[in-house]
Length: 174
Image (cartoon, rainbow, N blue to C red; front, side, top):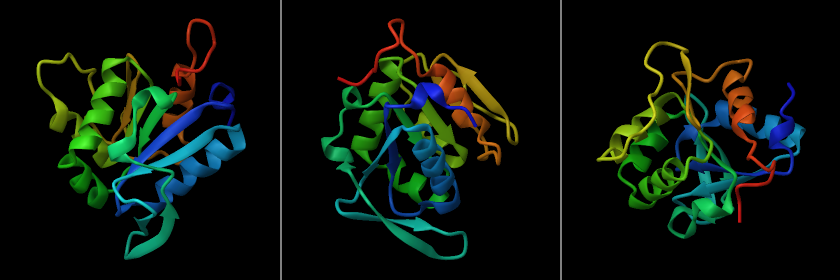
């Protein structure tokens, strides 16, 4: 998979304990292959735990906490699937703040699976892009990519890659 626009970019992956380990690993591998800098941003300081489908998976180190994260420090935001972690993020004020900042500044955002529900948790008077609504439907609206279930071919990362250019070809991150 060619993800040339992601190379050398700093991508935040927002998680809380209970994120989908399979989706996370697929994203992580694709980012490493493309030369992108994937940074784990979590509610938890230190380690955050994945969910492997039938039980707790591996613990992953967090690079930053949500409470100290600013959108300006990243080029894009990915929130992987996983109902357990999305339920936590829905009630996390800092998660809402970070997602709202990415959308307000029209920065690239990818929401997989249950993460789409986070849009409802931050809706207000803002004019948010439309999101996926049917099974495995990939929608790109402005700088928001949504997919109702992670695709095996990682079509959602290809769509995010296409959004990763600025007018001058520079990084969004400060």
